[in-house]
Length: 255
Ligand code: BTN
Figure (cartoon, rainbow, N blue to C red):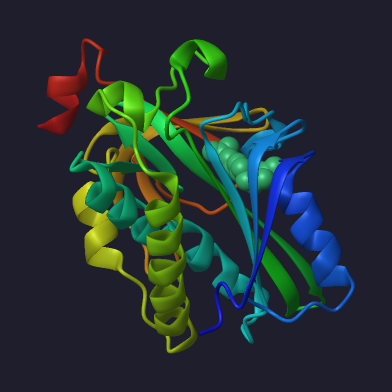
């Protein structure tokens, strides 16, 4: 067993990703899992704050894959699948995946993944897979209008310990497959909330509008822009994506 070889439990931490990165820099072997009951400076993608009130699950996994840096995109994107499967098992809810790796229930965000890496040239020194889940948190405590929690959606409290154990087991299996060159592409596609839909992607000052065609093997989202250009989005931590289903020309666009 690699993942969960050592599990560090904390009541409160500024950010479990930052702590796991500190261990990574100090030479900690892979498999360390840092779990916190709340975070005071939780971070999300695009430099955003990750609201981390009690009732959530905030965990960071230190890994040292022997893979060149371009492989990290697929690790980041497809890592959403083992987490989605664990949430489905724990709640019976249908979990959607919004590229790159947002976890949704009925269109609202219940969790997200922030993968950060330390690399030297094209070599990966280590990665930290940070998973934030709104499990039993109240929507009012999360304070983000488009977010919800599993408990709010399911209507009852969810046991965090078995969920944590299941995520660790599933990430372990995912990691072994990843090292062997396999990712759960089909499981991702069936849960994708954006494929074949009209989307808007924002990356810094750039804005792209088009139809989400597929997820490439390397984890990139392939779009066909309104101008007919085929684009590959791969900046997972910097890109914001939203569906544009309300647009009047959506039906026409699908023709
Ligand atoms: C996102 O923006 O969707 C990704 C959110 C990732 C949040 C998790 S919570 C555990 C870990 N520690 C952090 O500071 N961030 C990640």
